[in-house]
Length: 632
Image 1: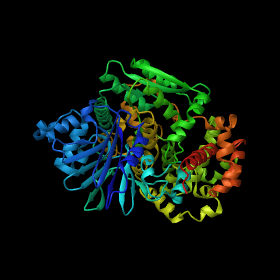
Image 2: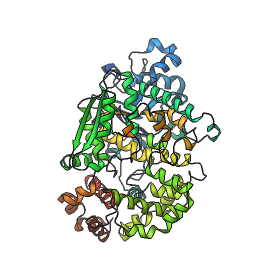
Image 3: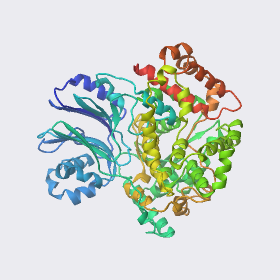
Image 4: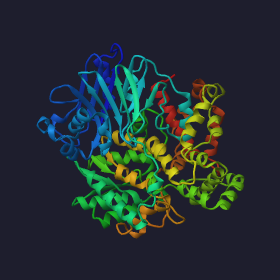
């Protein structure tokens, strides 16, 4: 797990090594253990290392083959590298000089090129360069766990693990107004979008080849539905198969030359991972977040039950508002693009505290997207199965909007969910899912902006991007909903959050639910195995029922959130409300409508705040980023 950066220059290289070193150093938290640079007249390749497998200096990068004809900079982990070395590279045995997965990947690419990408179990982003021919290959893992940010113009293609390492190398930095609008819709950017023009992210499961100065992008993996396999397993057989696949996935992810542990939230997914991981170690370290001041958000009692059952070395970190405020600026400073999923705050704190004990942590990420674990999945299921309920919810939508909505109380949150259910009931399947995956609808998004800024936003582009995801849902197969989340929510929000917050603390996160064999198996099952009238994540709950304490079942899903509403109401930090959202600055900036921001502040203190704190948090994150980067 590391940070990488580099550039391929179509004509004359226009970046000196000193400038590149400074850019590479912005990734120091991703890789604090070693730094390396390779350059010639055509390329720059930089690497910041976090040592996990083969921690010797000989495994530092950029990594060369034994004849100095090829070089790689690699961010990630290949868990089946030893088996691939045995099966695919036996004729290279004498050339190996380390026991690292990086070297195995290098020789696989030398021997097989991009054909080897589908053999890899793990997560990765890398640049592989043929020094002899001047050809380059850039690639990203199947689901987008590791980032690959790209900038391209007529002179060059730049790449890095984070935008902050590209920005110092860009000749011009200009904000993408369409991306700004999409950010406020979702509270994050769609997976391939960037906040800056001419910058994008390489799609998950894709690779780029640069040959004779031509840049070509192709897919090596596409997650697709296979209805013909839905009858392959009975339900009981599928449960048994899931246990076997998850056990293998967890076992593979236990490989490490540094201390390893697991996050334990108290939810089903992380509890499954801990239950399985405990089979492969005598004493597993586990880590939880708790909330002293707000029991509605606290799940530690459930985490403690799992820790006790498996006798883990358990650490609970109890957080208060003081903890959030102490870390707020560290988090905002690290974000190189606006990202307003507020759960990044507890994620950052959990990673920071966990890093004091281990360098690698297993997590339950991906379980909700793969197996239908979100409340919006349940709502979609209800509407599809009960047309009358959907109609009633839609007709009652005006009433729900008048009632007090508040995510921080059970009653207020129930009304909020009813209002969202009613709004979605009147839309098509695809449009409904995009609305339920968004914080704001398009009318609300547009109301945030000044008249002059609205004119710069390309509404057709926004509609096209939303329809790109909505169009994935066009039949009655519920698996299409999950496929959409795998393409939008997982890489754009969940994996981006975990990558950024863990790397800010030099901690590697591994996600057994996102093993390709597990995911492909799941999408070969009928949706009825995953969700029904009683259960979300049905097969996960049933398959592991004997592994988990019974108290974990039959309780509401709790998101990994913080009580923003109370925080904003009780401690309105001067920097947030009297600087970032101050009238003089807003009017000079000419992006937002100050009247709208004033109404949001007023709604925060009303009896019907809805989910206004999410939009205020999005504004705070954006404004901090804007001031920090001084983007036009």
